[in-house]
Image (cartoon, rainbow, N blue to C red; front, side, top):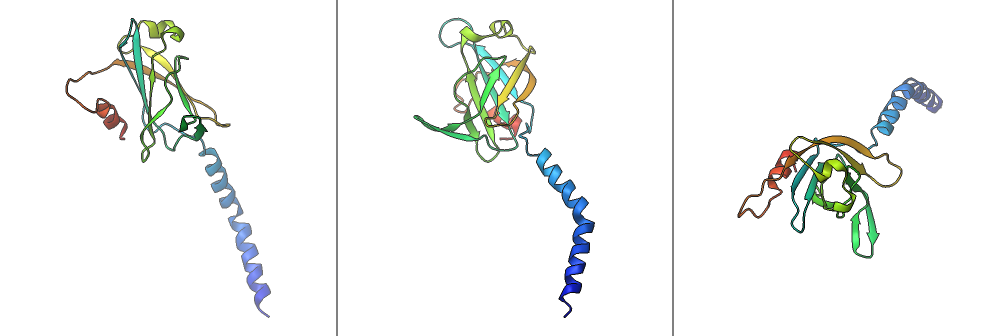
Length: 164
């Protein structure tokens, strides 16, 4: 029977391909982390109520944030912190492109830099992804918000910059 010869060839072929397969597996394992597709955007505006400022952060990731089920329904499990200050739950701007936004407007937990923002000020953005994945930490520059009268989608210029 000639089957053993074919099996022998398959074993030799598998032995020759083993280093290539191992390299592909290790590349896949190292690329399993979530990454930013574009530089995040951090906007500041005067607060709508009281003194201080409100901030909006826009990010685009290479994959979707994990989801969690709460009393309020299904939410994104991740969180975005701007210099340690948290905000509203992370909202999805585009499911297809994995674009997210969060409003940070908690004056009580602002760092000194966030209490006196200015154009170009560097602040730390931390993206908590949930699970065992390491957070993404980046330095971003603040920019003033552009309030346009009569525009229904105020986020449009930021979505465009991120490719959402």
